Image (cartoon, rainbow, N blue to C red; front, side, top):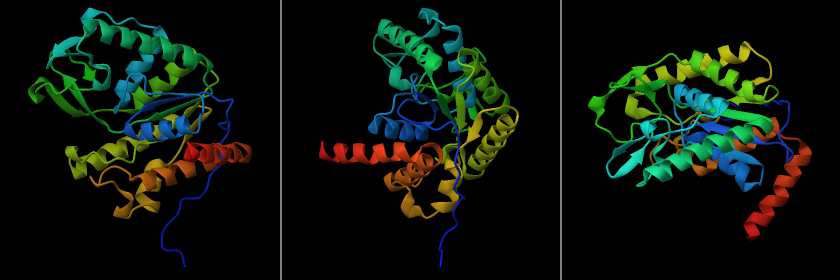
Length: 277
């Protein structure tokens, strides 16, 4: 007797192998997949601007990459003894303005170079809720702990930013495969109902974008977490993020869908070496 519902197994092409180059952008969940790719020594580049939760932030980053934009002093600000950019995660923030600008510009150039040779781009939005900075009207990637009064919180339209993200990727590399997956991490600070609104908008928008083009794919990490792993034992202590065992399971499902048997054999050998180390 089967005591859980399981999503049908799917196989996708083009496969990811050790001759592939994978760019990963998006929420904290894409970091889990990126860390797995790094663990198994795949050529990959993970979130050069740090975690980007919203499709607008992802699209904005890709616009900078496509145009090979240069960040200047006007693009950063000082708050709480550190320099920040509204375009990037606080992981890039620095006590030195010069250091921040160098890291931002280096990340843009590195991503542009990597994307030109990439075979796959994985995009994982986490929320449709965005924060608009009142002073400029821009939707920010990160609020950097500025007072809430400086922002308007909005449930934004996300299909157009996701479509633009694909166009920007293809402008640099027309043949790359784009894999969308919606983060299964629940954003309950937005509220229980608001989180469901957000995920529903993301899922609907992603499928609309995929239906409109070729070599666009969907990996159901959200559905696997909600249906196959719905028990709370698969969540971390905060009851919001997937536990390590859930991350391992979703990774295994991802590998089944996107990797050949030959590549899976190499994974097992690398895992043995990693455990030995």
